[in-house]
Image (cartoon, rainbow, N blue to C red; front, side, top):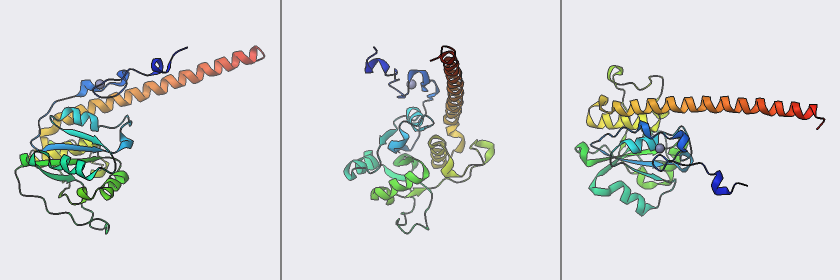
Length: 226
Ligand SMILES: [Zn+2]
C-alpha cells in the first residue's frame, strides 16, 4: 500500500505547481523602476489560472504576501519598506460611501514608488480594501487606455477583468511613461495561458478515457454477472 507521502505529487519549489504543470520556463526576468508588492488573496493560491506568481517570479525584487486581513504593523512595513511611497492599483470608487476618498497621486519620481497590487477576484479585492484601512488610505493608480498599436491588452476587457499579470504590466508601463516596456511580461503570460489551455485539454481527454474504461469495466462486470 502506498503511504500518504507517496501519493503527494512532486511540486516545483519555484512556482509551487506540480512538476508536470511547472510554469518556470515562462519566467522572463524584468526590472521595473517602481517596486512591486503583490497582496494575494488566499483563495488565489491554488488557482491554476492565477498569474500572480509568474508575475512575482518575473519582476526582480517584487514581494508577494498572502492574506485577506493583514496585521496592521506587518502591512505598514510591507507598504513603506525602503522609504518608498505606496500607490494602490485600483479604480476610483466615488460611489462607495464605505471607503474614504483616496489622496491624490504623489508627484514623485517612479523609482520612489511602490505599486501595490491586490491579486483577487473583483469582489475579494474589494473585501481586502474594506478589511485593511491602510490600503484605503493609499493614493490610487487607475489604468488608462493605452494605444493598441503599442499594447496588446485585450480590448474587450475592462481593467478589472485583466489578469493580475496583465494589469501589473500595464500599470508599471504607465508609471514609467513607457507602455510597451513590459511587453516581455505579456509574452510570458501568453505562453503561460497556452500551457494552461493545453493542460486542461489533456486532463479532459484523460478523464474522457477514464470514463470510457470505467464503462468497459462495468460492461465486463455485467457480462460476468457481477
Ligand atoms: Zn516551476
